[in-house]
Structure formats: structure tokens, C-alpha cells
Image (cartoon, rainbow, N blue to C red; front, side):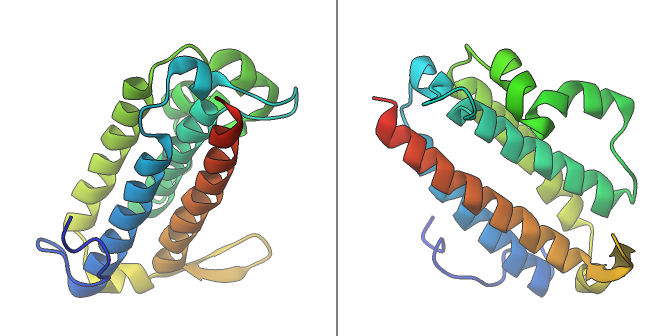
Length: 171
């Protein structure tokens, strides 16, 4: 925790992967702060019929990371089993509003931690050249693994903002 505000090397990782891990650690820390001590009714709160709950957003953050694990570590789409497990969290919307409810905070935190443990385990076995490895997506746009994981960070930050907004209303 004393290095939370330092983007830099992390023991057990190559230099650039260590920088990525330090950013992942900071973003997750602030997400956890945003949901600290929430009760199930707060985690399920939706201000209107089109909203997603805090619980659904936490599940979505974990699901997106699972998707990027498959894409970057294994160079594949999600398996049928992964789609079954994470489908409503990926999609958000009507399905998640019905399926992702009634859990306590420990449930969501455990899922986030399990997914992150896999990410860190995989990153430990990779080198900085892996971050630079390129592929294409969409209309042939070049993309590298570093950008993909930068996107994971931005994605969580975006949803953390939604979580903070929802928290102020879910009292």
C-alpha cells in the first residue's frame, strides 16, 4: 500500500508489466474504496428501469477482465463455459437487472479477486515484449497488448465513476 501512488516496477514482474500492475493495483484500490461497506440493497439499487446496479457493474468489471484474459493470454474468444458464467455481466441491461441481484459485497469482491489473481499469475510469466505484441481488430486497426490492458484500466475507471454516482443515491 505504501507504493500505491507510484507507477513503476513491482517485484516479480518485468519493468513495463510492473508499471501495468501498479496501475491495475491503484485502479482496483479506488474501486474497492468506492464500494466499501455497501449492503445488498445498495448493491442492487437502480434509480430507473434502464440503469445497472452497483453489483452488476462490479460483475461487469470482472467479466471484462475475463474477456481480456482470453483475448490476450490465450488469443481466443470466450469459451462456452465462460459465456455461461459471465454472460449477463458482459451484456448488462435487462438480463443483468434480473440475474445479478441479492448478493452481498463479499460475493462481488471475491469474484473480482479471483479474476485479478488469474491476471497477475499470467502477467508474471510474460515479458515486456508481450506488451508490445500487435494484432488487429475491427477494420484492421493495429492494437497491442499494452493498449488492450490500458483499455481494461479505463473501463474500470469509467464504471467506478458510475458506481460512485449510484452510491450517492442508494442510501
